[in-house]
Length: 326
Image (tube, rainbow, N blue to C red; front, side, top):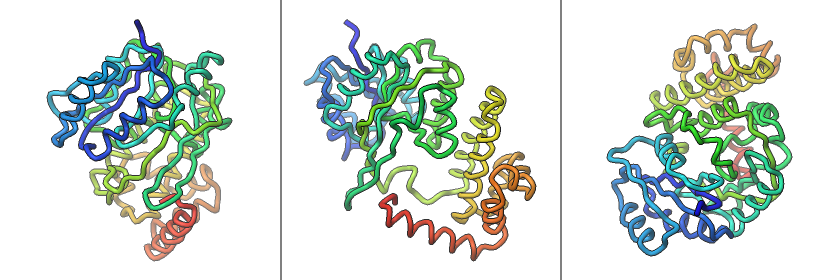
């Protein structure tokens, strides 16, 4: 019989966190689930944990890659293997609140929405974190969701139920070893291709655990910058071509990203070299047109006055520490 929910867990080098993740999923309040763990050729003890847990619990099954292919491919392997009515994405170093799956499933069935999302709680080992609020901010139409994402709301795949039919033909592109903005790529393609309906609940449905070893928290290398902007410009062009009504907010979003990287000390030429469009977006006229005079002036100062950029970064980091966001 088809399970109600397929929880998809990509696994790579997460031995210290994997048991915690699996325990939280199985306490999610829905017995009628399957947990599809995709072992992306992990070199640590994760495979042994998966084998033991799958042998003792028939709800857990394991798919394995013969070689490491990256997070995006692992998620694709998961949703192609899923048998559930709904799909839920969970990274293997994160957890799910008790009862969260039950809450999402009940809301999804009542609303009939293609995507049912809750809020995300950022968890810190050294004290309280903060909440990423999505309830009432990312729907109900897909264009509303897009506008929210492009103006700063959470783009994460996690913390939401997706109708499995959204992934039925397996037609979404998956890039090997794309570990930056890979969730944004899949979400962008899904929204453009399916035009899904959106429903939100006021509950926290996902715990994102801040992990100092996470790929998103290590010092940026030129290769990381290149990979990040390759993904962002891919989405930028797809949105620009498919949804003319979003062009203004799409350019605002792209410019804000460029500005942030400049503020954080990424060399000006490295940013300009990310894509030919960067040169145009960072011209004085385009900056004023797309983000207004204040941010345009800030961005230009970050480009040409290194001391200003360092002071701006220090101020932003201080504010984020006060807000418990770093």
